[in-house]
Length: 349
Length: 111
Image (cartoon, rainbow over all chains, first blue to last red; front, side, top):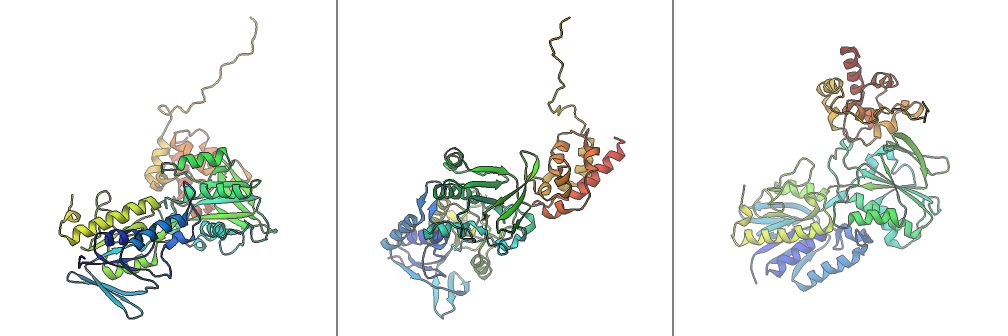
């Protein structure tokens, strides 16, 4: 077995897949996960766009990779220090354990946007305003879909771009996955409550993935989901607990108001606390949006400014799952190149 | 001659080549944030004037960008300059100042 050691920080999709690939190449891999379970955000997701495949199937795939290899897995890892001395990295945990390695893969993922910061939409103030992640948890639980009043909602609104493309909350970028998630969740709501009316309030529908447009058409054709082009200015609570939304129907060129029984905020992807913390410890460069800055946007997306540190997954930018798999394997290859002195990760243009 | 009831209709197309874009140029020069509007309509959704009149600041922007300026003077008179749109805009467009600049341009060019 190769004596070279690698620490992977983060046990979500990116970290699990990168660790699996590097371990399969014969390296000694230690995977550090802050939670008690591997899988990251995917653990809270029932079905995945655009195929409606179960999230747990992907977890099973990742676990099969871990099972095939010899990875040291450390759960509940609270990193208090990470540094590079000469060419050796050392990582310390709050429980006193420490680990050394020749390279590090940072896969610290993302945090969901805190919807309370978008105060005008009333999250945390009105009971019938929830986030997309909470709706997904409800799907995952298998419980019937009821709002805070205990009633089956007959009118449901989805608000796109909450915490994304919004200068006022400091996130100017598109979170990439929320548009198609809203379409997916709209379809699921219609499947569970066929007589419900569903409305998506969007600015642009970014259906960039191969089958996303098909899913969008399916939402229109099969499920009669309504799409209203306009961004909410505010939401408030009616006396009966339903939610009144104010929006411009830009295609009708008139302000529109509508009451819904449940309002779902499509919360965006933001740099995680772990990303900020580990980045500061290792001296990694951050881009203008607070995600890690790679060495080249086209050609070196998984390579950091610190030799021996590589990136995988949503710590770089919002990503779809298939993007994350591609990243993780790329990061593994770049790490191997670094450790074997092939130097292909040092190319600049 | 028999009257069949036919009339000549006015051309409804935006005649982009012929339209006068002086006001547009003035606004762009003096309030460059005008350029970064994405027509999301948050401004109109929150607009007090839009609830009671046919004032639509988002739509007005689009018309101005195409050089459709004949009704501008009448339209901007409906704005109360309260600035709610300014607070709501996700792109940080200085919407209130755009209205002021349109007004200045109208005066400057005596339109």
